[in-house]
Length: 453
Image 1 (spheres, rainbow, N blue to C red):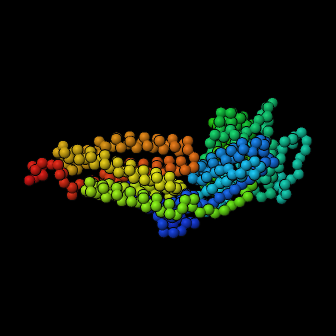
Image 2 (spheres, rainbow, N blue to C red; image 1 turned 90 degrees about the horizontal axis):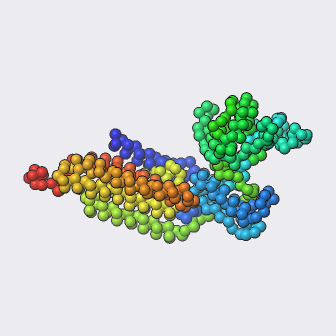
Image 3 (cartoon, rainbow, N blue to C red; image 1 turned 180 degrees about the vertical axis):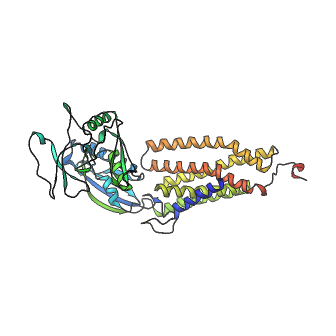
């Protein structure tokens, strides 16, 4: 069973690593791995802020708010290595976004430049029209506006954002949403977006859904009605969903926009350009050569010191390397020099785990046990030590990921995957190989009588 798991895991890694992905070419091991700005380059987008829509005229404060929202959006969408900065000053302030290895700038632009204000409302009227209908006047229509319905040609709803609940009016917007994530829509097919409200939003949403039982409750994103589901019953749990047979990409983009918050101003793109690597080619080559040289020295040392067990350690080390690269390809993580540093760190973690196991096995051999019994006992005694040591590293990586941004998140992701892979290779792959080799191994610490001399 263990052998099948080892083979299946490495087979999946090779599939993720080498299977030709649409839009990617080349024979390099990195062809399915996104490379960072420092290694491969990427796209640079410059935006200026439309201050005519700003409620706060302080340019520096607005720029920092915009930068924070864009950073959160890019991190949520997987562009953890993107660089978001501010250039210029005063009214000439621009927001600069540099995204590594991106082949479709329009996908990033939809995340960056959209204000994405989500809110619920009430349908006062509806009509079919090619052009936007004229406003309606009167007390009944005060605070209403015509909005087009997504994916319904020529359909318009007259929306009122203030919802009357008894003697009071309430508003429910994206500021009360604590979580938004895509999930499979098992009833209608495709994907949907699941929402969760905070305590205030939960109460307001419960009151609204009580009023709208068997009626449509429209959900708006900016100036468009994205969906207007019929409320079957009052929803008291503080959860909701946006359905519409979305593709996964559309559902993820919508969830990202909702979860990351609203931009305080509109952004207008003023420049787009392709960038080369931020580090020189010579620096990149030297760094890679240094990493390869270190790996080769470790491989040689393990064979010289541990002989046949050293060969097992080297195979486990290479296994973990392919496992790590396969995981990076599967999760579409972006590899940068800090990420490569995380990979080099996992090399040490993998070797350390094997050294602990081998020393335990040698202790059991010195106690007079057979090779097979020594291997079994050595792994049993080393497992707790290895798990404890690696869990502390994983906890540190989680802290880096939670509080960090950009390259720090990328390093944390690479480190976490590498350490988990190191535990798997040390405790499962190495054991499988050693048990397979045990009939051909001899206990050099055995007495002459035990050796049969």
